[in-house]
Amino acid sequence: QVQLVESGGGLVQPGGSLRLSCAASGIIFSIDAMGWYRQAPGKERRLVADITSGGSTDYADSGKGRFPISRDNAKNTVYLQMNSLKPEDTAVYYCKMVYRNYYSNLPLYAWGQGTLVTVSS
Image (cartoon, rainbow, N blue to C red; front, side, top):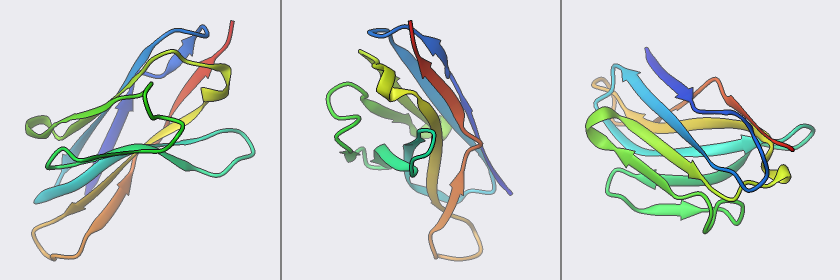
């Protein structure tokens, strides 16, 4: 089994910062990419940013310029540094991993349980 454990969410005032972390564990042969998605109340889950094992990044408009993504391959951990937070950033943030195990070369997908970020004064 594979597990993704997220941390770092919470309540922050507008203009503040938070850093989200997501650590993967379990039977993992390799990780293709890790990323962050968010889901606001009544809305669809959408990409914020993702990063490949080689370091290539992709940002949605919501994350571009304010939420740099990074990863520590040795720790199977991805980070999202959230700066200049706005009330509209309030959402549950989910970590997603695309990986391969030892039994198949097909890409597999795993999601974290989500961490709530609330931006409010």
